Length: 543
Image 1 (cartoon, one colour):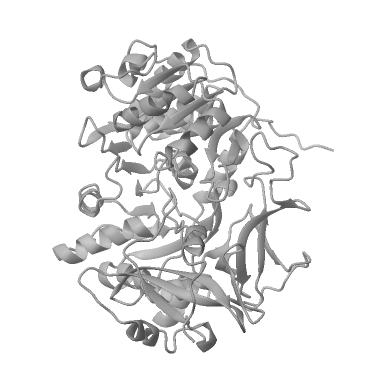
Image 2 (tube, rainbow, N blue to C red):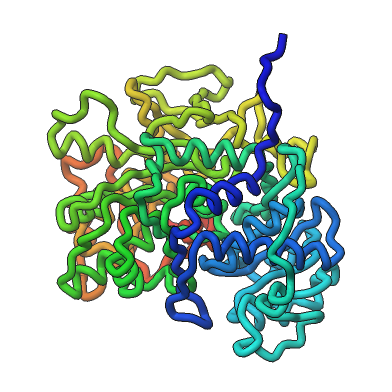
């Protein structure tokens, strides 16, 4: 027997209609290349998105065709999120920080028909245009006045494309399982792989994100997504924010500039900001040097890499900002866990609270978690057992785009293998200890490179740190700590090693410390440990 309820399809166009009806006067503020502080309302956004949808239809696109973006966080990019997906096409966000060869591969693999780009990426696209013959035309996200001269075929400005179009548009009633967005992994060990999100998965993910124990987003919030719109749908914020009617502030190309971020946080009275640790490091360094305090920001959600305890304490102790760490993946839309306190934790000491805050968080309804051993036996949630972390749920990918059935999906018995090694404590808090390919096994026991790195970064003379395993004649592998000194600092190896005393297990102590000027990073800011292992392949530890 079926229930007698309406079978309404879950589509992103529903969010747009709801936002316009219930929150028409809510603001969206953007830093753009052609306007230092663009400001308009939800009503303006919805009207222009309908114009965009009409323009897209006239380009001759077919349902399911991919339309790419190469752009920063601003209002035009947001319009593309809804206009492309809502009209029945697939919004393919491309990370402009990838190597040109990777961008070429992604464009061709996705079979992108049109590319929408910020003006600053026009030279890049001109250089690779000869290698992407399937692209039919380019739209530069500016107006005619600021339109650069270009050799790109069929190039037109965004404002010219939509300007003459009607703002009346009937959003199609699509199947909620239809694809809405496409995002490729960074491809650190091979070609990037495409994750194809559906309308249904996107709506369910947005619902989950606004929950009090997750992003805790409401109409009363002003949100600054520093996490890029080209990186896993900006963690779902473009959908969640419009769903509840939160004010949006986009930093455009200034997302890495501490001074600009501080100015936006203060002037727009931002209550919630989201980004990766490197972004907040720039903000905190600017505030410290300028002798300024964050007066409006209430909380920040940090993901993409483990958050050092020192960063959590600086946000909380200096700026009275609550830090919530989260964990997820491109393959998970990306939310998997979010660190928020549970009932009964109000009486914890400051040190006890921080000990929980440094963990990746606890599970979100809709995303199941488990850890397993090498034989796929499920391990206990005791905070001690280490295992391969696996997930499943309605916003977790079942396979990669164009790789269906090839065995490359990391699926096992309906569970997706994340490639992370983790523990889960009795309260359900997840702690990522390593990537499977990065784990250090010394004498048959696992050592968490992430915990060593986070402890090292807490030293005032350390700007950045990485840990890899190097060969050892007795223990098979031992940890090597690779450090970038902080500006104006010159710590010795002995000083760095002494810092670990009482902070990590003694047998985890790195066998050596090497100082370098830079570390290799992926396009999303993660340290490329595969490159470090190549660089130090012949390294001999001190006797």
